[in-house]
Every structure is written in C-alpha cells, then in structure tokens.
Length: 239
Image 1 (cartoon, rainbow, N blue to C red):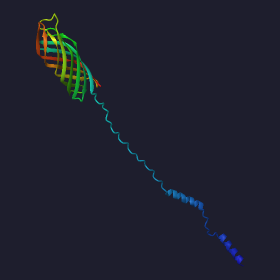
Image 2 (image 1 turned 135 degrees about the vertical axis):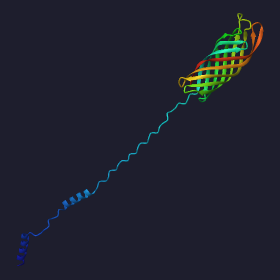
Image 3 (image 1 turned 180 degrees about the horizontal axis):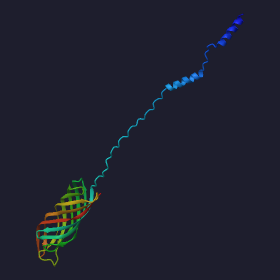
Image 4 (image 1 turned 60 degrees about the horizontal axis):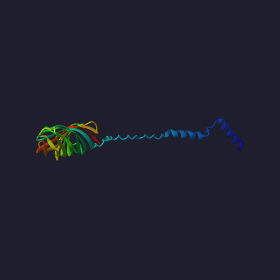
C-alpha cells in the first residue's frame, strides 16, 4: 500500500510541473563578476613629465687683448744748430727709439741718433751732428681712438762738429761741441693699427749750452747760447 502511494505522489509531481530552480553556472558568474570589477577599476593616471626650462645662457664678455706696451721706432729728422754767431739750417739725422707705455697717459722713452747730412753755418764753415742720446718721460693726451698728443721731458747729450777750410770766410767757426742739457719736445702720434703708428714731432736736444770755438783768423771765441733743435717724421712699432 505504501509503495502505491509514493508512486502516485511522484507521478503527480512530475506531471504537475513543480517549480525546480535550475542549476547555477558558477564559471559564467565568475567571469561576469570579474568584468564588472575590471570596469570599476579606473586606470592609474599617466604622470605628466615635468619639463625644467634650460638655464638662460650667461653672456660671456669678449676677451680684450691687453694693450701692447713696448715699442721701437725710427725717425728721420731735420735739425737747426744755433750759436751766438748765427744758425746752421738743413742738418739731417736719423734717430732710433725704444719706449714703454705704462698706460695711455704716461710712458718713458730712450733715444739714440746719428747725423747724416751737414750744412753751412751763417758764420762760415760747416756743421754736422755726429751723435745724440736722450732719456725722456713721456706724458700723453688721447685726442681720439687713433690719435694722441705727447710731450717729452728729459735729458740729452749731443755732439756737433764744426769745421772750416781755406775757402771759408774769416770768422768761420771750428770746434767740437760735446755737451748735455735738459731736453724737451712735443709730438703727435697716429695709430694705423694696434702695432704701427706714424709720428710727427719736434725736440730741442740742447738748450742754452756753451762752447769755445776756433775762429778763422787766429782767434778763439766763446759761444754762450747754443741750441740744437730737431723736427721730423717717423714710425713706431709696438710689441
């Protein structure tokens, strides 16, 4: 009897379509949950590179070459030899120079010169510069980028020879002046470039010196105010 009842109950359930939940597909559920998790995860922000501006270039001052201070020079000079008895114009000499400029306002200069041309003296006979030497302080005054005025203040020594012959008139002087004295001058320098320059100048080598001369006719004569002036053009080279 029990068996019959169980069978009848089972049959009624099958034919009645009872509510039976379907099986759960756990693999599909896990994938869906993983996709939802991935959707919710926001990607990390990409870091923006920090660009540091390059430092501004530091201006470099141009290298200015140090001015050249030493120089040598050569002058062609005309000269006038003056005594109490008269003048002797038209003498000629060459002068070599060595100098040093401490700055654009002050320098020092040494000179050595030799005569190359003699000339007639007003009193008769001829005179010639044999040699001359000098050392000078050299104050300078710039007048622009290329031109400066300079002075010469120093001491010089000069040797001047005077002669007469049988054809010379009476009163002609003969003798050798070999004296030293204060010396001074003034000049203008024009710089062609940083090495070469042109120079125009006038210098009194001897100032108011004395000497005794033989005079044609058998006497001697003292000359008490003798001056020797030079003037000319030259070139200087700096190194």
